[in-house]
Amino acid sequence: MESKRGCLICAIFRCRSLTRPCRRQRPAARPYEDAVVKRWTAGIAASDGFVFVTPEYNYGPSAVLKNAIDWVYPEWNRKAAAFVSYGSAMGARSVQQLRATAIELQIAPIRSSVHIPSRTLWAHFRGGDVSKGLQSSRHKPRG
Image (tube, rainbow, N blue to C red; front, side, top):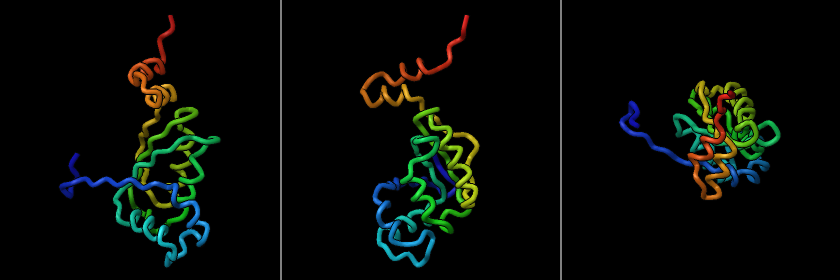
């Protein structure tokens, strides 16, 4: 896929390392003091858009992801976001909450999302036939 700039560069940001440093400083309090927080916010600031991949826990996204999103404010502004989710109800409720958060942070969420059925996810993790998991999760006509 080619962008107007002539290239597409993808980076993966992992939220796991952010849980501790984010507790040491007030969210969105600049200048950022912690080295991990500085790297996180610099990566967000340098990006043009985001694809959030999230499970659904208790009708929402994971606490680690929500914490990482809440940590930054101006760096998110005026950028696009897409969502990929899995879990209960294929993660639809976590995406619903993330969309509301994104709008408040002045992120522009795209309309469509990718929701992965649990059967497909388990088939993948167990080394099984992913396409079979997709077929069995589709609604079959009743006769």
